[in-house]
Image 1 (cartoon, rainbow, N blue to C red):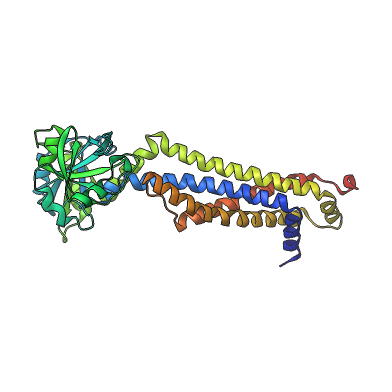
Image 2: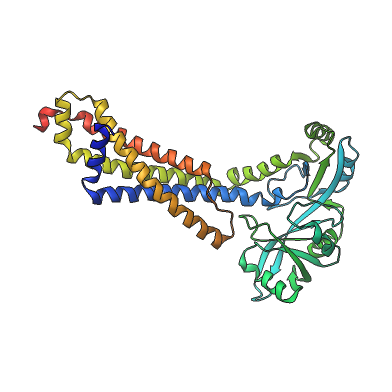
Length: 384
């Protein structure tokens, strides 16, 4: 360690109470940023969970669709027309509706997202899902997402106990024939899957001529981009054509730009950063104030302002690292609690940890530069 490093370290630990208060303040700011970023990422991951299980290279939807929270219908015949295009290997339909699920234990009613599919086609990608398609071929049978919020009832436990479970969905009796795993989101607390005929029965839509999503599989020797261009050129504004990633991005854009949720979480990150800057500035300002004679002596001896700024930056970096480590460890614990309580996908990533650490370094460095102003204005003659 160089002399400047020793000087920065011993000045910080000279008043241990202030040092630990500073660490606690920086940790609080980092935790605030971690939680806001975790919730924001959870919003996007949860909102696009249904998109991630679509077995498709291209997805067609109503041109004004913004989110699966408010699905919009278009004519099924468009899907049949798509099947005739060169490069299209197969097509399948998805029907979507938000229906009312009655908890079989306490009889409380809660909205649930129902997906209607053709059991003869492999429209969804879920672990061990194909083996459950035979259950959906039977009328009034549904599969329930076992990762849905607990307000829907202890469906998994009841199903394991009885084998089959009768529940009420949209004021009609259905049988829960099995489980799958997807997870809750900000848009849907729970999800169920049925056949298209059961979907029409439950939703009150007696006509099968309207669908909400069309799934397109492209033959291996064809270009997805070329087929997409051909479809868009023919159908123009009648339907919209997306790759699966583009379709997921459409959902993310809706939640980020068309609702206040994305803005609120983003503002929380900014607030956490500002809080950290203020806390570190107060600590460094107090340090400069307490050691003004010593700093003045160094200036009188010929040490430049840049050298003294280096000391403050060293202090800021020490505080940054000392505050970030406990914040990171505590955030793991808080994420696990939040995920357990909300059934939302809240988890730590290496990219997020590096980003927050960079923000921690930035806010401490900014504080050091601001605190340096008082030191730069100090005149050794005034001190002595």
